[in-house]
Image 1 (cartoon, chains in turn orange, green):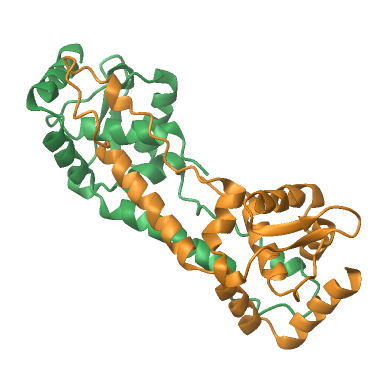
Image 2 (spheres, chains in turn cyan, green):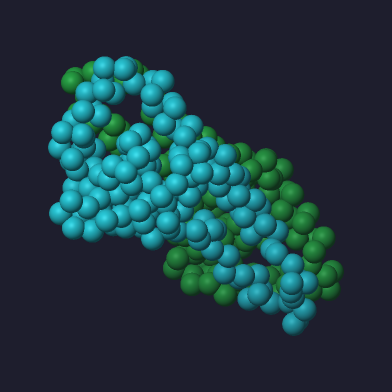
Length: 161
Length: 161
């Protein structure tokens, strides 16, 4: 059970878009070149972010992506679920319903003990991602990356955009 | 990111093996019939449990599986990891290393902010499963399933074994 690479790409792209001045859009092509990842696959992730309403997009040669709302209003879970889907990581097939038991299954409306713990674990995973805002991630990037390196990469984006 | 069906099967089979009297082994064929799942795929899950040291197995026509230790010494995480592997759910490819930044990457030894949150979420998921023992699951099954239904299914297993 491993997340696709596009989750990592989307998270990084969102931190970049969140650092752009208002009104500036960045193309998928440029985001791909910036991160050194394949444009075709990144485009799909960006389209998924747009479909989830996390980014605005303008088509055409001058088009690109920008955040649809403030980074403090977007969580890591929003981004991960936009790309990976919202399906719970445990797919209960209710195999207990197949067990020979004289036509007397366990309370049929109750959730299976096994499934309930698996759902609890899934929720714990999502809770961590829900508590982390995009704005927190951007603050952390600004804190960790040396100022001149950040300026250089920002200028690289502005010049190519 | 969804776990394979064999995780559910393995968890159910372990609760069955945990209810068997000491010394009784149950074959993969019978466990498959009991749960209404394909024997070939279940066998692979049972072999994974054996490889992880969670069950003992005896080959041959009279062979089968039994727990290798007390249900209180086996966690749900042990079972899930035996079948699904221990790899972290987020595969960080360190794409930040590709970002143009004048040859001055962020402190190279530090974990990327994005990856650190993803790892924290992964740990939260595992922690829930680590806290749940197989003995807890068995107690819950005994509590939820009506006594006569449990007796019927146990007898079914003993007669066919």
